[in-house]
Image (tube, rainbow, N blue to C red):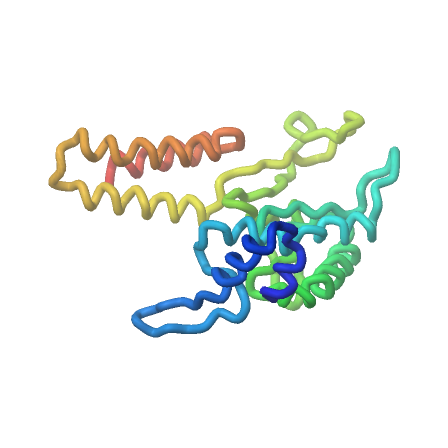
Length: 234
């Protein structure tokens, strides 16, 4: 991330901006090796997500300008962003590719680019072949998996006008999130094998409660049952 570009978008007293610049350029000490930080923000830094929001402010407007909302018509493209994670949704593959090019160009002055290894173009209902790869349906975003499933007329989702779609949309905890949570649970249990049961419970409860609260509003019953079994049998 270009420091000068980032600082130009921050409107605050000059003394605060000076402190922020010093913080950005303070360098990193890794295994007793010091490295200068001429670009980017510290990984895991307490205000890095805020700085990402400042730097990427305006990305949504790029897509809204290209494909403005029209009364009574479906939106051609929609961008949803959280810090530096974002997804573009559209019924047209051509529009998705145009959005990818536009966002890549918009990111250049910031010093950022879309990483191919972290980017997927997929369909939410059917597998597709893209860039000589078979992409499975659905995508992960912020720890959730968003996917649609073909079903009969009695279980189908409906459009805002009540028209049967032939599929429901399910949002579930992603497999990556489940695996990470499972590893955390196993680690706590392993560290408390010789500890009193009350100590184990007091350490597990906030972890399980926080994770469950995060996913409680989506399709999580099956996942919760599996994780409950894991906790009881580790």
